[in-house]
Length: 201
Image: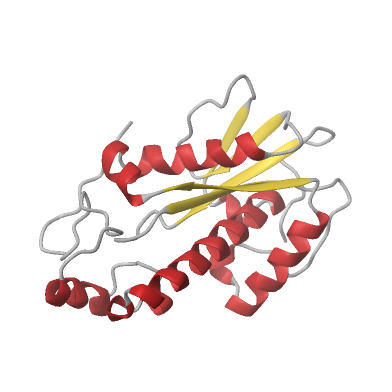
C-alpha cells in the first residue's frame, strides 16, 4: 500500500524519471503534486503495472493532480553532461513547469541536486512507496514510450516500439547491422562489448 505523503500538511511534489538505462532517445522526468485526499488503489510503481493500467492512471493523474509536468533531456545533452546529471536536470525542468510551487520535493533514488531553496528528500525505491513518486513514474514512462513509438515510425529496424530504446539483444544486433542513429547515446556502450562506465556528478 503506497503512502500518501512523506511530509503531511504541506505541498509536496514527487519526482521520478524514465529511460535512464536506454541506449537511444531522451530521458523523461515528471513532477506531480497530488491533492491531500487523493486515493487510487491501482496506483503503483510504473514498472509493476501493465501498459493499459499505466495509460488509464495517466488520465486520472492529469485530471486530479493539483499540478503535474514533464521534463525532457535529449540524447545529445545526455552525452554532454552524463545520464545522472541529465536525469536530475529533467526533474528540474519538470519542476520548473509546475503551476503550483512545492514546499517539499521527494525524489525516487538516492541522488539529486538542490532545486532553488526547496527542501528535498531522496527515497530509494520511492516509486513503490509514495503516491506522488509513483504518479511521476507513470507520467515519465508513458510520455517517453509515446515518443519512442513515434521514432519507431522513422527507424523501424531498431524495434523501439517494443524495446523503447533499452539494450535488448535485438536492439544491439540492429545497431551492429545498421549503425547508430542521431538518437542513439554515443557515450553509452551501444554494442555491449565493454563495461558500461558509471559517471558521478
